[in-house]
Length: 104
Image (cartoon, rainbow, N blue to C red; front, side, top):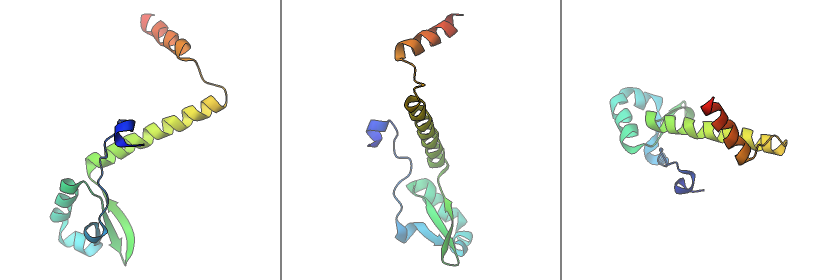
C-alpha cells in the first residue's frame, strides 16, 4: 500500500549506506553534524561499534510517526483477531452504541 492509500506520509527517508552508517567514534567526534544530518535528511543513521551495528539514530518526528504506525498496525491486528473469532459488531450496532453513550 502506498503512503497515499494509508493516509500516512513517509516520515523517514530511505537509508543511504555510504552516508548513513557511521562508527561510534565518528559519531562522538561529529555529534552536532550527525544530528543536523538526521534532522535535515530525515534518514536514520546506523552507528557501529567494532564493525557491528550498535544503535540507530532517528529524527524525533520520524520516530513518533513510526510509533503511530505501529500502534495502528497493532489495533488492526487485534481487530482482525476479533473478527476471526466472531466478536465483530456491525456498523449500525456500533453507531447506535456510540450515539447512546453520547446522549446519556
